[in-house]
Image 1 (cartoon, helix red, strand yellow):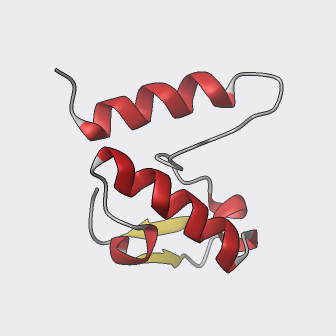
Image 2 (image 1 turned 120 degrees about the vertical axis):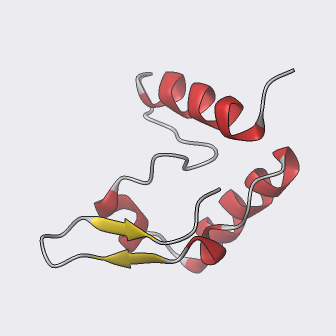
Length: 76
C-alpha cells in the first residue's frame, strides 16, 4: 500500500518530467502555475486529488509570499 501523498508525489514528479509537464495532483505546487490557474482548472485538480484521498487545494491555505513563492499552512 502507498499513501495518497506518496502516490501523488510520484505521479506528479514523473509526469512533470515528461514532454507535456503535466501535474495531475499538483502535489508540489509550483508558485507561478498555481496563481495563474482558472477556477475550472483548480476544480479539475481538486476532483483528481479527492479521488486518491487528498484535500482540495482550497483547504491547504495557499498564499503568495513577498518573494513570489508560496506558503502552505495546511498539508495534504
